[in-house]
Length: 272
Image 1 (cartoon, rainbow, N blue to C red):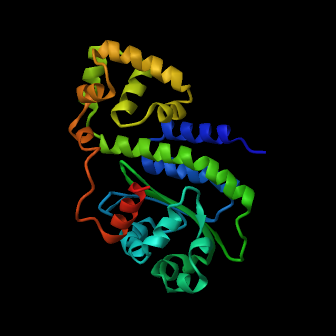
Image 2 (tube, rainbow, N blue to C red):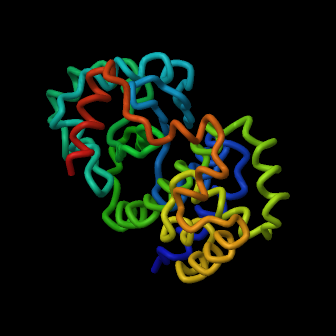
């Protein structure tokens, strides 16, 4: 019997100790492979305009994925995109018919050479862009079993938080000097510093609690202390006091020139 709390805690620890988004995703591949039983894997982070920002892969060519991913995604219909963006990870055979699979370039160019027989995937929109993963099994046909898919579904929320955390850090790269200034000025503890940084990046109390493996009440108590030391009374005021030029733009709208696949996905997910 697996423990969702244990798995989620392990993934959160991987995120907090990772040096980059790519490092976190490779660590996740290693952790998940014996649990889910896949042969190939990839994870892609794209901006809201569809530009690929980061690719991590196991067995696939990261260079090929980064170059061709927008083209692969553009072939999918809005209905197919939303099928892969369901709340729980979806098997490709649940979304695409065998005939449809054969017609897609991604199957011919990327999956067929490795004899991929079935894959499970999930795509989601966040304030930092569009994320998605893909775990596949190669021939001979070995379908994913229900317990493996259930365990993956339990782990996905922690993966999403980890990816958002590392993506936010990459977007905030170069803000260290101003960060040191507010830490010194306010006299924050190491835990308060962690929480303040996550608040400034837009994380909610429940998300911060999950990442740091503490209770939401503890997060709130730390925030009371942070507000007092920073002489602010709201999250917005705290963020304004800390923000760098990168943080200012975290909430901006996606480009009106978004590529078709990205526009269809992000637009429809936001309406949910």
